[in-house]
Length: 221
Ligand code: CTP
Ligand code: CA
Image (cartoon, rainbow, N blue to C red; front, side):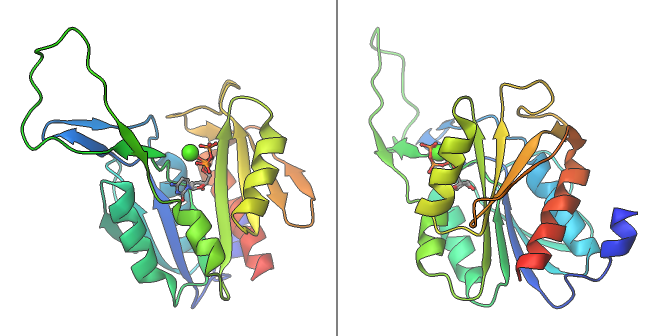
């Protein structure tokens, strides 16, 4: 019923969704990565397209099919994701950053495959740009939505990110709860808004969470 009643609510809106994890090269055959499956972001992209939006899905490497009616841009690194997001940002109405962006990258990717010569190996990492903070600083008309996956002090951390990144809403989830972790088809989310109000969602499929998120976002437009 939620799908039917929300049909068309995002007509003529451009929605950018980022999904999946980034990969930061160590050498030609290795990378620093994370456990993001991309499922939450892909569910949002699919639902937004069904609601009539013009959807751009900027995706890290995942093993999921491109949802129907969605334009997909594949990226690997945080730097490439930043470039893609910024090139699509100006005329967008909604940005939903479900991607798990690597916070750090190897300072230098080795040109050749690293050989196991020593008994230990130290990788020096440097900070990646914070894409969402940058979007928040240059926000025009956009509704900006972030995600916060935490293992402790969920609300505290999520609220701090909402403020620091100048977001309109943040989707917070405690990844230690069964049914809310990485690679699951379900999620247990709290939606936190600028005015401080919080909506606690029960265990839901990621498709259902996507519908709730987009319905809330459409009210913030
Ligand atoms: N994010 C981003 N660019 C980064 C890091 C994070 O755009 N370099 C976005 C994520 O896509 C997510 C939100 O910021 O929507 C929060 O990500 P999170 O990793 O929880 O926040 P951080 O600011 O990286 O803080 P920390 O990892 O220390 O908790
Ligand atoms: Ca992070």
